[in-house]
Image (cartoon, rainbow, N blue to C red):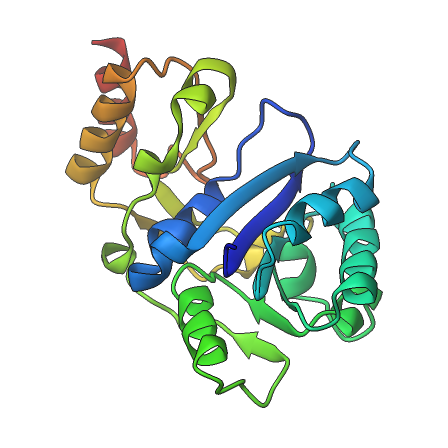
Length: 234
């Protein structure tokens, strides 16, 4: 039995979810009671539901993106049909900004809007203690990036050998492009660069060679960008 499962449907097998690994890394005392399960969008929702419920979780957290919302909606419908007592928590950009009329939101128990790195763990603590929040929609409380535990140790040897390793040296974007959800961010914030590069060194020593940066504005501070590139070129 695994009390808490973090899951998502990736577009391809070689993709990995950095977001889920951030959530797991910041579960605190609940980290040992939490597991990540990644699937691909081509998998049958009924098969995914069966594998998730096999662990008899009390809480399932699902990351919802533009490429998986259709399949995740089908998955949530199945999960609530087969195991209505299992608490479904949604997060991700597809449910953070427009949730009033989405069928997937109506079926879920809770939705965390915004960066859920710390909020998800707090919600799980309340739920497991028998103190369910009165509101379905939970707005994540802002935090400093220095408060986060970095998740890169959670990449497995299998991930490093066969999958893309997603990393980020900063979050947010100062620009306001109308076509981009990142325009809703108020600023760009860097992670501590020394700590970040130390984590990259550990991944490299473990054999990682394919790093994919997901920064919205990687070149915002040219000096920092050059330092990162120099690290990888050394």
